[in-house]
Length: 257
Image 1 (cartoon, helix red, strand yellow):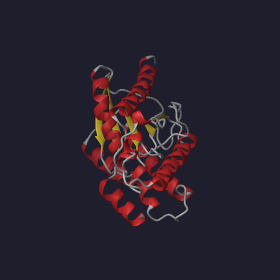
Image 2 (cartoon, helix red, strand yellow):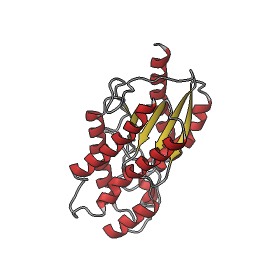
Image 3 (cartoon, one colour):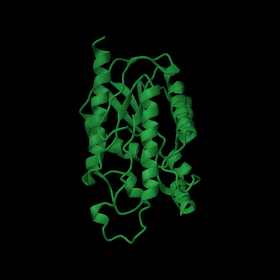
Image 4 (tube, helix red, strand yellow):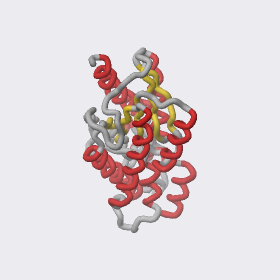
């Protein structure tokens, strides 16, 4: 089962990556930097600030949902750079190629790690309930490395703590055959998100935004294993609202300086 699961992860799943430690939204501080000189938002050509949304399939879906909000904000312009199936290693390579071709944004929101956790599950012991500290530390190091590439270019880099995973049967899936959904894998992934979220909150000073979702069935997709790591449009709307609040705070701090 784990061999098949690993194959599915590599071939088809792009799950958002970073999780918070609770079911509610959280918000990190805006001071200090980790590995870079930028400790506040600076819009080089006045407003609007350019915002890069970097991550995997949930970032991609959130960014599509966020387009309506973005259109109503003259103070920033969000760019959807989410890629389905992207790991933190992929994200590091992606940012290197982007910076070789594009001017860095004023703000970057970086949300990777889900694929890394999923891939670690395929080789974890059968009784493992979450990734090891080494796995979490490596994902965090990759995220920090992405920000360390962005910060010297003038970008204020914040990390996203992700939605988690739905770990119980969705009511609309009552008719699915037994074993269709690997809940042991989903619990492992959800725990991995929590551990990574804790690492972000404890270590990353510039700030973070929590996209962690409550286990409200109206917010979660259903119908397949992969769907349990993705949201409905209602869920993505909540992610978008949290992103809007975070960006509003950052831009307000810029405008009042």
